[in-house]
Amino acid sequence: MTIAEHDAEIQHVVDNQFATACAFLAELVKVPTDNPPGDCAAHAEKARVLLTALGHTVEVHSVPEATVRAAGMISATNLIVRQQFGVGGPCIALNAHGDVVPPGQGWTHDPYGAEVVEDPEFGPVMYGRGVAVSKSDFATYTFALRALQELQNNGAKLNGSVELHFTYDEEVGGDIGPLWLLQQGLSKPDYALSAGFSYAVTTAHNGCLHLEVTVHGRQGHAAMPQSGIDALEATNGILSALYASRATLKQMKSSTNGIDSPTLNVGLIAGGINTNVVPDRVSFRIDRRMIPEESTEQAEAALRQLIEDTASTYPGIRVEIRRLLFAQPLKKLPGAERMTQSLQKHGAAFFGSEIAEHGVPLYTDARHYAAAGIPTVLYGAGPRTLREANGHAADECLRLNDLRRATATVAAMLADLLIEH
Image (cartoon, rainbow, N blue to C red; front, side):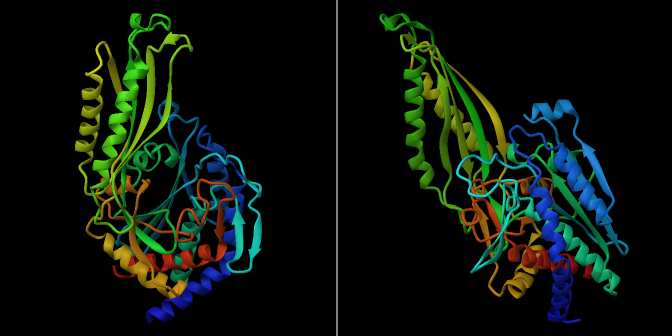
């Protein structure tokens, strides 16, 4: 069978299942999974019911409560579907996360309504929190697997297995989702595909470090400020040093298309007692993004040293630095190019346009698979940019034709990897 014939068969199967895939996605969007607070058990149960109705055997792996609480969530349930084709061959894991950021203000559509509006340029568009990031890829991956099953039923000789990994903690780092599944020995895939968008294959992304800095001084009456040690004054000096360091970060450039320079942002600050009291305590949180070429350990050490050195210039000041999150960058591993090249080849056929390879400045669950030595890329349903999808913003949306074409692209990639063995 030629590539064109192969793709035509896949497209036919995906088209026949498209209405069912859209209904499947709508049911998932209608169940809230805001994280925080991170109570996602009801959504996992809904997904289990929907997957079971499609004929899949669904493994339900509930994360122990103490582990969930330590991650700052209320409940977390990981789902695995396993499908074996033939004998031997590689295992390919498809991972998407169901937790989402809270909807916030400014919506013109019900964030949990899964409303579909006909757009004159793009066709049907579904609105809802998580419809693009990344409940859409619950549907992409589920129906790509169903297309693969249909190919086998029609005589395709496939060898290997596909696993669906549906997890619920990406918004807090993925430690009790993909990382937990791997650490528990529940999955040992040879390749991994994580949720992404349709018009490019993501093969690298930034790392991320979150630090909480607490500056301790001594309270005193504002009428006699010399009686205290001003934690806010010291904090001002530390923040000035941090902001000044941005100029050095901008001089560092990544060689990865789509990634520019490391960044530093202070996103949260609190402290003081009252207007008439010298503040004795101020805390703030830092977001530091590391490009793939950086040593993440050296980046953290340098940041800590800058804070401590600056604080030491203020007599009586003491600082505490606590790591909140440490996400390694995603880097390309040998073998990942097989997925990338296949997705680009078939994506170009289904979308009628070139599928680029790029990196992104954010971080994702994909890093956990790569850190375990598993070749990993990101690809799924969605437009060219997060902004076009209104991801993490009001009126998040998905062009449903992107779901259709991405499903076919993923199915064709899976077939490539399984037919070769």
